[in-house]
Amino acid sequence: MKWGLLLAAGFSRRFNADKLLQPLADGTPIGLAAAHHLRAALPETLVVVNAETTELSRLLTRDGFFVTVCPQAKEGMGASLAWGVNRTASASAWIIALADMPFIQPATMRQVADAIDQPTTLATPVFQGRRGHPVGFGRAYFAELVQLTGDEGARAILRRHQQHLRCLSCEDPGILADIDTPADLR
Image (cartoon, rainbow, N blue to C red):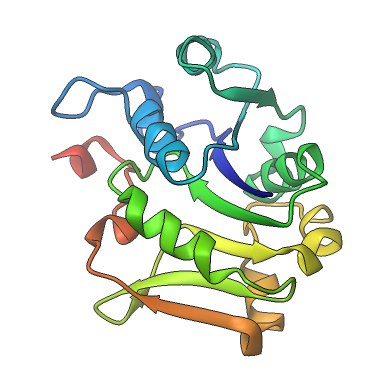
């Protein structure tokens, strides 16, 4: 079974507020919109949060999401990713999405998931020549994923195993659109 992992354990330092609770044009909080898109593609979705994101956790739980609190969230994205992978250790693959990227279309996420057809496969969408999110990891990368620390995430794994990386052309600019500052919402 392939799992969607939504990383929502950051601390919004550049935003100066809890960015994942900021409403999009339709009123949906950023983090909740990203979670809905991932779950539309992958029904088995786990959201990794930090201990301070109580309101987002409440909203996600109300909407039926599996939510887990990463005790090492302050160590960075790598720690949150490792935590989520460890919580879904029986998965055949992981599709890693970021909660501050609410514009990625579910079809793009499904495309990434469908591309993981071997344990060694890695997959990422590409829009106008630029790689984006989400990124898919086959089962063979479990040991490397659960060892991640720091804020780099899984970039080093992608570099080490680039011969297994499938770059999937798409027409989804959302794969590049993350929200880090209030200006990014405009």
